[in-house]
Image (cartoon, rainbow, N blue to C red):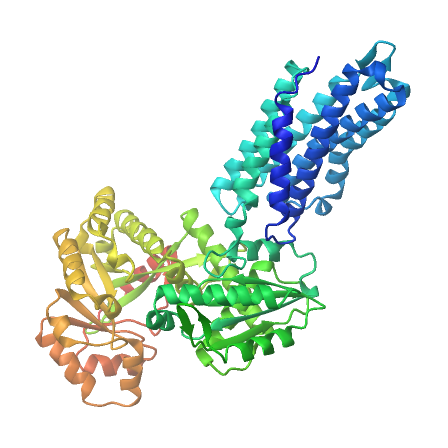
Length: 637
């Protein structure tokens, strides 16, 4: 006798689940389609499970062909469900079996073998048979559980192997969780075959899937009520042929300022009105909100994107009104024309966002079209970003040293530590390429810390004083300068290598001096630990002699553009400035020295130290040591 107490509630839950899911907004993602198929298949499994169990108990009241049909249907859908759960696992890890045709065929063989064994059972009695006394398991019934366990194990392997493809860590654990739930259900079904409880575990697995992957709240922006950035990335990644789609977008001009003027509540209401209009007016396109007033539009090749843009342009000429909202918004448009498939989905996505930002700055009201140069620029940024992440993760940021020359003797007395990274082929990536990206994504502090630690290591093992080097300058970024425990952290690194902190001068720019109170507190903390400070790039920012006077700098470095300007067109300003700095107790370094003439000019106006390519570019450690040894052996001028 079969126990139906658990399967009937599972069927009711599934019916509610399926009815609710049909009416939810969703993108045509592989995972969404696979989940919908999974819901349908589970419904068929439960229905045929109830039917086959009932007719097996009442076999005398049904014909043999019908008994074979009822039981065969159940086993077919049972096998199909195992395959469907495995296939769903593959979709959420962005695994495309067509990219691995041989593996895909091998993974399908157990399922097709299951179908063959089930269909042939009336003759082979492999999976089940109908005898005079009713239903009997076949001699290969254990294959049913073997196939279930096979696909669950394969699913676990896929999740672990592809864990880096999950956008969130919680998604990885959710994937492991629903497959573990299926595993427990299969074990219980094997041990207690008369209890129809495996369907309950399958429903529990689907609930985990829904809450973790298919819940529309995950993919809908709660202000604009259109799809959000997560769904945008997933959709672009799943588009089979990117060039068969059209991409456009619009951005609310000066969004942040506009939000301050109208207020957050009014702007959120405005976004909701815009989203409602988009969903109602345009059925042939998908709309995504990407924060800061940016909307992305994706349509297929039949979508008339020009018409959409024109209608939106006309609509934004009118205010957006509701009972408590009236907004007058200006927008700018951008589009991306894809001619080939050479670029990744992320590059298309970031290029469109960049062009939207550009259109907002230009505010021309014309639709700005992304060029191939825009795509190449973003591709380069992505390439550099990956190289930077690899360097930081594996402690591969290289320290280079550029000599600092004493003007009076032309001897090397110091150096500046500079960061360099390499790509996977061993080619150097210049600071002009990776520093802006590091500043934008917050990695500049990690770079600074690695350079500081490696400079300390160099000082310890190179005996720089015997080389005639009295100190090495290490840059502190404005972001680093805000770290509250910076002094303790750097002090611990210095102690680890057992060096005198006076051997390291910390360079900060005028950009770091915007908050004078915080700056003084940070400098004081680091001074107490034994570090000295140098003001870098003077003349590049908002120069303020009063602020400089109140800070305990030991050296002022003149920005190279200031130096070049003076050497090309001498005036009285720079000499007077240098004289004033020296009267205030600062030594002065001139950066960007490119020629002997520039060196003589800056020396004549009183600069104490000189730095630039005339003497040497930044060098790797071994080359720097060789260079210093060669220069140190020369007679003093």
